[in-house]
Length: 311
Image 1 (cartoon, rainbow, N blue to C red):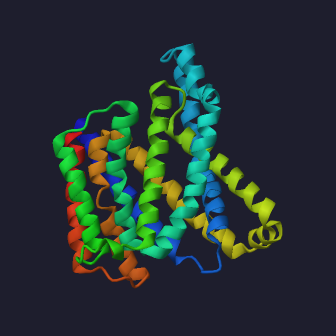
Image 2 (image 1 turned 45 degrees about the horizontal axis):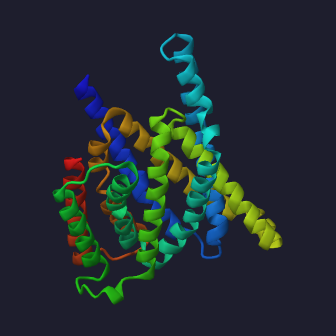
Image 3 (image 1 turned 120 degrees about the vertical axis):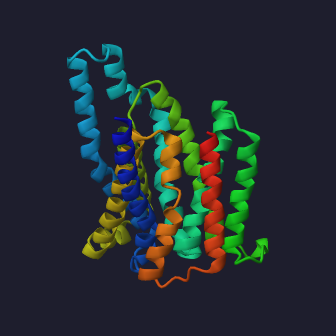
């Protein structure tokens, strides 16, 4: 059984790598006339739609478990409706993920797919930081050392080995900030799962639906005519769907990986996503994967493996 879970986990992890690695490519391949704001709104809408069947199947499974007496009535109601006790937090998380999607497109547009993908691997550092500050999780000395090593690899790549911090692309800084905000939201969400007040697919659908509502309302208030024009363009709708589907499918495979492997092994398994992005970026976007990028990517991946192995 353990070997079967390992095989399935590796298979789903490979698919997760591919779709997560594709996200920067789709973001930068879109036509220039598509506004990052409306693109972000459409992305979270379609991501929510794509993952809705997963959420409904999970809710159906919970109902079935309750009817079979496998979970208590208290857990049943908490898992299905507990999110209602976290309205303010949900609003904040929706705003962070909706607004953050705008930063995602701006950041990748400035940084490029390869360096942008590396910048987002700083997520492991912010996971440790917020876990320590907010959830009182422990951090080992080895994790601190390799967190510094991770940023060393990132700086090596984005500065092409010059280590001149003034040469760091603005897009890289935006994506690091975005990663920080998203990891803060993830950390604040974790206690909801621990209290059994929601399941991951439900939170993803809710946060994206809330984020979409916020973005569309803001866009309509300030640019109503432009919003109507853009939403009536099938090309824009198509690219919004492709981005949302890529995100949604990537998340689906990530959750499937987590269902067969613990979070540390799963995180190690998807650590090579910058390599996948680099391959796709070289083929489809004609970006150049330099020696500095290669060395920096290897250092980042090794750092993630050591940090998660410790965890």
